[in-house]
Image 1 (cartoon, one colour):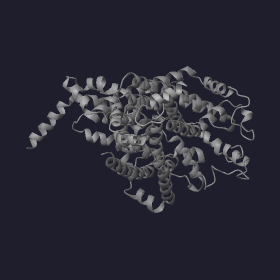
Image 2 (cartoon, chains in turn purple, cyan):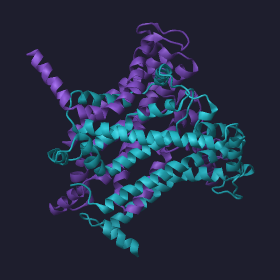
Image 3 (cartoon, rainbow over the protein chains, first blue to last red):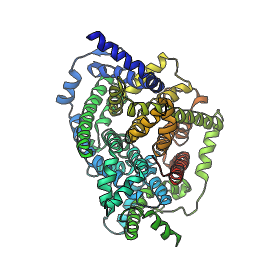
Image 4 (cartoon, chains in turn orange, brown):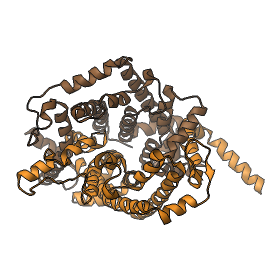
Length: 301
Length: 290
């Protein structure tokens, strides 16, 4: 029995040899530069590692310190969740809505608008927001508010604890129409035209009906891609905050889990502790992905 | 008035009214202006002379536009002992190899993972998604160790190979191929085509939009690659690394920093436009699919 089963497996593998050959070039590189580094980094969370001496096994102590003694970390969980819940869904809906609306325009205009919305995520131009939110009266926003008399003295957008998280969220939303948005655009461009024609014959009357009955069901895989990209983007954001509102931000108001990991990893060189932080974040994202694929799966079928 | 005729042409689908399209256009225009404004500001900063940086109230244009910031950037770059053209060459070499290799390798693998039922396929699919979600700053360290073992540090390979191994493009392509009808692939099989032929002759020509999106992603990622600790030889460094050095902080250098950012933004935009044109042309020529 066992042997026959094994034999069949080998036979199936042999039958698919061309498929394996086609997987090979990518998978070799993927194994070397992604899988092996990831696997090597998994146990680091259980060690004390300063990048100079060999890692020392410390059991769960990193994790217990994290949750019991690290107030900044607990705060950073809150910031990350607020941040992710505000930017993630909003930007996801925006990605889809804009990709769809753009698709309703003539082809030439589609290219222009796609570029306009995608451009912010293309390069590191977001430092320009520093000019807009600058705390002195040379900042564009402050100058505008002073001019119309809404405020009497400049607001410290980048250092006032009441505003920093809001500022970072605005800028993050601005750059968040990235990979997910472009993938959805490609999805719209790839939908089989004949589906729409068939739909028109079967009595579809408006853009809305077309969207709900034809487009969305055909876009399931792209919606899943965009969701994963959005989860990664909104949970691991940290560099925008670091370059805009400084590091650490006022009262840790914009201090995300990723900023915390950066702090311990590259400033204090406590790599073991930083790994533990990243592991917690990874588990949160994994759960989130589970939930979303479940919802999307139910929605698609 | 040809515009209206074009609008009409694109409205041939079910229940389109021109009024609706115009409302959509205006909405996108408004939002688009908000999106573009900071980029416009970056461009203005790049052509503002230093003495205009602190004019009150801040101007939305340059009173006395100048290319000094760009000149300044290039002057700093050419002061380095490696000629500027060398950095350009490095960047182009790395970007082109990464983009080409990634598109070929990832497309093939994506096709197999999406449409071929082989032992281990499900596991690999899961692995791709999980690896996308696993973000840790320790990974770079581990990659460094792997590369050191392979004697790749301080070579072009250290920049190229890890970038090719990035799973995002593969995931995108796989998702896109998933929604292709199986009947096309079955038909190719009946005609006696092997997987390789099916992939390149049947599937990929139908996947132009996803393929071009992949080119954009791969190019953009590769173009912004910085050597960091992987490359220490000055003659092997890429443009972003040195441009950043040239624009290194300081208030009076704000204009130069913006000039550098704007300069680096140009090639990805050109690639984006070329890729989009490809998509639109194929859409016009063929009815797409089946």
